[in-house]
Structures are given as structure tokens and as C-alpha cells.
Image 1 (spheres, rainbow, N blue to C red):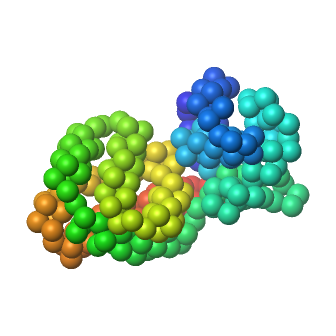
Image 2 (cartoon, helix red, strand yellow; image 1 turned 30 degrees about the vertical axis):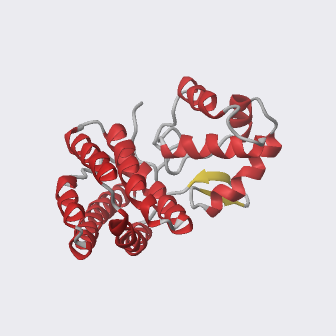
Length: 237
């Protein structure tokens, strides 16, 4: 799929076949039609099928899922609360476009929340979990496919942060990560994490060095992503 700037309306959404695959993956796996609809729109956004700035066609979404417009409309309020869409009084619903300042704030919050999670997780590390994290870290730093890298990164941190036993904090961190993950994928942001370096701090049980590594890593990605969005804004003025 060719993709250009989201802010000038040039970013192309996915074709019907891709959307049908996403619809099939969520159909029948949720208790209510509204939950299924939320999952479909959320996944389409996070996978880049509905890119930033794209105006959602409610009839087309309903058609892909085989539902009426009612659950589609009901789903949008929840997704707006997650920061994934914006509902405009006279312009329908669009996929959220983040500004550089919003990206900076998201990463500031991520550093705070994930630093707290990593601090609580390290004392609960077991050899089994550490082995899993080592395997994922090697795979993560070896992969050149961005979509695969995003999935491995998600698995790595969810495996680690689950040890903190703070489900609400983990859910908040996940929402923040998801809100920028689509930008990492669409904008081809390089994320040279050096995750084996984090593994060394985890293995040593060094909370402060692990938190410093995390803050440096997330801070670097934030700066890179802000620069790309600023460049895009200047090109569309």
C-alpha cells in the first residue's frame, strides 16, 4: 500500500481484502457486537489500515462486520476516549493525528508509568521469565521487519510488566504505547533499542540502571518521532 502524508489527506487506507482479514480475526471472539466493532476499528488503526487523518466510513465498517451502523457509532466514543479517533460535529470521525507536543507528552507519561512498572517487576523476575525475555530481545534486535518488531516489542514488555501485578497501570501504559505504535509503523521510525543491554540490567537486578536505560530509549524514540512529524507538518503548509 502506498502511503504519503496523513495531514494533507494523502495517506491511503488499506484495501477491502486487508480489512476483511482484520474483520475475520475479531468476528465471534467477543461477547457483544459493540466489543467486536471496537476491536475491528482499533486493530485497523493500530495496524495502519486506517492511517492517521483518515475519515472513517461508518457504512463500510458496518458492511465489513455484517452489523448495523448502531454498534459502530456506539464504539466510537470508547475509541475517542482511548485517543485513537476524533469525533467532529460536522465532519464525521477521523483517525487521530498526533502533534509533536502530544507525542512528547505521551512519551513523558510512558517513561513515568513504565519506569514504575519495571521497578515493581524486577524483584519478581524468575529464571524462566528471564529466559523468555532474552529470547525475545535477541529476536527483536535481529528483525528488520517493522510490523514483526512491533509485535515482539509488545510481547517483551507485556511479559516483563505483568510481573508488577498492576493491571490498571499496565493497561494505561499499553494505551499510550498503542497510540504511537501506528506512527512507528507508518513513518518507519528506526528504533535501535539494544534490548540485550536492558537484559543485563534485569539479570543483575539493577533497578536504577534498568529505569535509566528505559528512559533513554523512550526519550530517543520520542525525539525521532517528533522530528518526523514536524517535517511532515512543514511539508504540508
